[in-house]
Length: 296
Image (cartoon, rainbow, N blue to C red):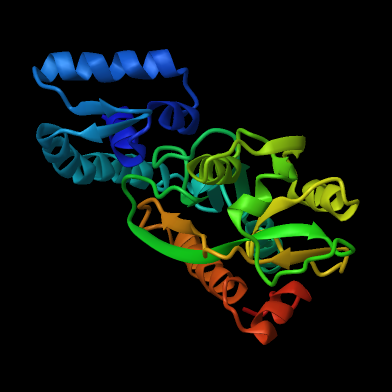
């Protein structure tokens, strides 16, 4: 049921397999077995993607609250144990730079709390209290979404005759990118393909700070989320907007442990911190970036 709900959310078998941390053939077999058991098709294949059938939409609507409630029961039982009360489990699938700063500030004020982080694969309601990701999980008790522009980062010494860049101009450039396994890279690669070209990647890293440093050397340009990668305060990289505004969403979701006060407290803190970081007001952004987040 969880596999089905994830594929229903992404409408993409490969993407769901990556999120769930399983092989795509295994996921395909699970979906096929579910369709066989129910005696109906749940998905129709269209190009690289999938679309829910009418029966698939009905099953998604009926299953979402059921699976959410089952997970709540399991989580509530776990939080009855004394050793679980001071633990918060967080999955970071996006905006890890902002989330890590927020966690550091919160833990300084809550030294007895234990934070468990996961980043590879996809966080689920079963093993995670809070999910930060560019893809919204199929079920959650609460969710806040933050939007940011996708910019183009380049060396500060690179001349830019225009105030914005077109995809036609980008098609001739070398790119520095996050690892192809990251959600943001898959998102931007698909943008390029929809514009009619395959990005020419000259360097990849799983660390945005390394990406910035390589871009600063003038070895290539890169796509850059305006807020969640921490800006370019060092001055060696500049951000240039695209002539067509592209935005990406970052979702901050509480998975359903409503009776865990510590999780609720941290979720409220993290939500407020993200709201400040994603604000376009420079004073708020500079306050967070200067380390004055401990009093939030």
